[in-house]
Amino acid sequence: MKKIALLFIAFATFSCTQAQKTEFSKKALSETLLATDGNQIKFKDILKNQKGKTTIIEFWASWCGDCVKAMPKLKELQTNNPTVSYVFMSMDKTADKWKDGIEKHQLKGLHFMANDGMKGVFGSAIDLDWIPRYIIIDKTGKIVVYRAIETDFDKINATLKQLQ
Image (cartoon, rainbow, N blue to C red; front, side, top):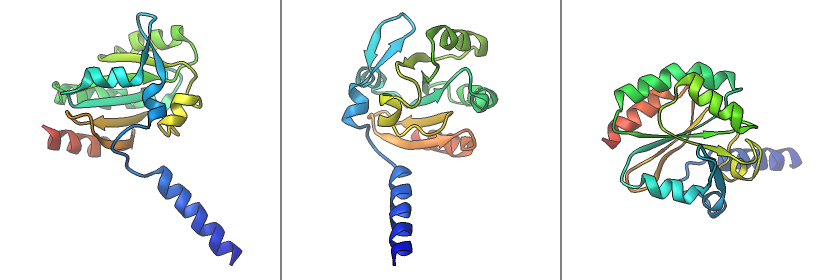
């Protein structure tokens, strides 16, 4: 009986962490991120500035091999979806590495960096367990895809086509 109960708890926990969310938690919205100009900005204000636009948020880091490997697909996505807004959220440990990564990979879009890395308060508030990770938000500000990773570009493309 204990094994069945443990199995049920493990299943429920995993299912809940992978659940599709349609909005961000209050904790996530209140977190601040570093902008490229050196100022801090609340996540909710970044999202407010995207209102009326279909937006992809990519969580990445310059040290992440999977992130770098996915960049050609991301650039193809940008070419095929020029009306979509792209917001990059770095999980780098230093602003210098983050800014070098933007320049090196010629990432076009808006750029912000988490103040406490992938495992910090912001990362936890958005259930960040893997990078690169993509979130798609529709023009009304509703989350349409909460968790996509580098192997999900077909899903991302199909979702963007539906939103246009």
